Amino acid sequence: MKNLADEQLMAQVVAGDSAALETLYDRYAASLMGVVLRIVKERPAAEEIVQETFWRVWDKADGFDADRGKFSTWMYSIGRRLAIDYTRRQKIRPQAARSEAEEEIMLREPDGETNVVETAALHFEQERVRSALTELSPEQYEVIELAYFKGLTRREIAEEIDTPLGTIHTRARLGLQKLRSALEGAGMKHE
Image (cartoon, rainbow, N blue to C red; front, side, top):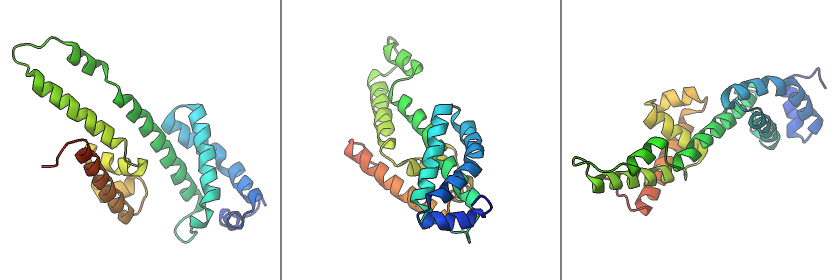
């Protein structure tokens, strides 16, 4: 089996042959670990992501199309997305808690120029926006983040994360709809 091409092994994986998946794992796990580790920078997390990547290769094997690209490209893109999602989740969770700078602002005595009511209202709105962002799927959040916080066009996003442009349009539309609903549900109206 070790002499078979990746595409031949994937055909066997689609047919339910776990030995073919093991061969692909032996072939690519170490290099995938290197890619993932550079992104997440934590070995235990990287090991889990590599395992999850190969689980998805097994689970979504029928989604692989050799006419659209090489197996290794497909598999690395799965691992890369999982790693990016992991790092994004790690960044989102701490944001729910106040940073030291925010704590300092909140504890500071108001001076004569500070409008306490406006400052409190702005802080409250920021918390609602953060909360609404956590309701997006990782894929939707990634598109929103790249578009609104990094200024990329949808075409640039598609190239950046190696995803079809139509998928990017759909994720952006659904993400914005979900964000709008969450914010309206939290009492914030879009103007």
